[in-house]
Image 1: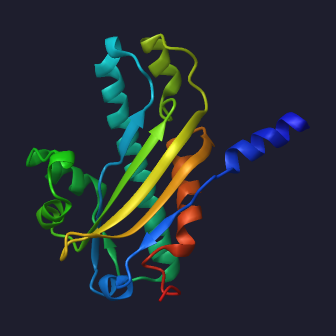
Image 2: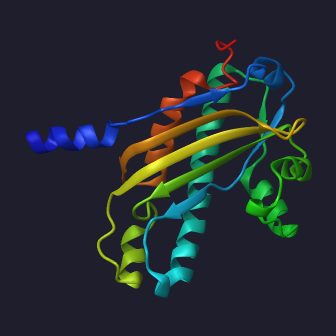
Length: 204
């Protein structure tokens, strides 16, 4: 029983949930009709220089899975709140980014928003101890140890306004918990963030 309670505490414990919101957020979101969600920047905290390529490939896979999960959660919120906002399909977002050879970390978010022809972009970053996707197969090839649940140390979501090129909303988890999949992580992350979501009509 004690072990079960400990697991529950670990899963749901969140040491810090800071939220930043610009003073003119209400005015900014009124101008938004289209949003794109970029692939999540996933960082796997495994130090294995001999397997850097495998780790990098796994991070890309995690980023795409998390991008898909965030998109699903945003779509759910838009439907529930009947918001007049369209999410650019992830396939379209990624196709444009790949076709133009954009390196997200080396390109301004404003330029990316202009390239995607959207009013705002959602960027995210997640640091994890182990992979969330196909972990068993990953570790069998990496020979780095078991890969079941993963401790997520930091999860961060920001929304960037195309017009100004500035971030106007940010939500950050620190020591966010232990998760079994990318879908479980995005569900929990959005559940925590949604009450202060900037496209929520209840927030003025």
